[in-house]
Length: 127
Image (cartoon, rainbow, N blue to C red):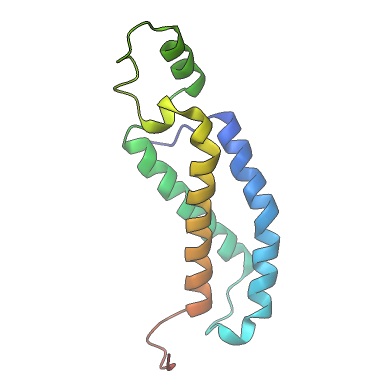
């Protein structure tokens, strides 16, 4: 199933991409002597997006984000203290969405940088 991320989450991820992709690509260009192969910029960005989509899909398959506005309204209008018991953490605490997305994005970004800069670990370089 495709990830159903609220509009604010999508906007937040786009903001993260806009703030960091150009700087990351520039950083990798300065490290060109460190990379075993030259990787086109579009491949780097596509890989970052693929990593993000994979992680978002894992979240969706395991409870997902839900309709956050609907969850907040139903929990706040409910007199039953256990109303939120069957909701995911992000559904119970929608204010944590930016923090969660930032951490997930940073993980994917660092993993991408490491792979591009390290390349094939069997290329004979000494560590």
